[in-house]
Length: 185
Image (cartoon, rainbow, N blue to C red; front, side, top):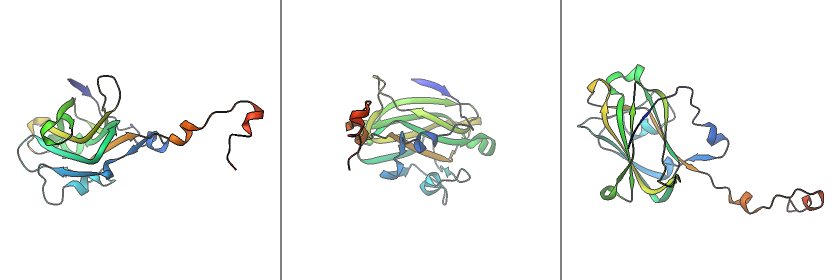
């Protein structure tokens, strides 16, 4: 399944995090790369700057492997690219795979990007439209713009839904008489 996505420089991927709906869970994972040039690895990919980036250094496909210690619900993957700065290093076709380990990865989504500048949000949905639960996510850069060999990815965020169980168990009182029970003293 291949879909065309466009990057949006105005997309605020932090909005749902500020609202408490999603949280970034990439810090709970072990990250590895198929290759990288010295000084352009996981640290630069995961920092909070869009000025730094991961640069691959080897044959395609270029892989970003994200392994979680426990099965994790993934709502979406957000990727930041900058075609204006990176040109032929910018990914054109990306495959998103998920599974328990390297040997059972299945492709969840394949996307095509056309000169992207900004964030691209890739929903991670199952057939029943629920977020996937997985131990491992692999992002494979299959091709670059202008037939470039190596790739630049500036940032990747892995986001999970926030489940606020404290509010789910609390009944919502509407009458004045019952509002006195809304707060525990």
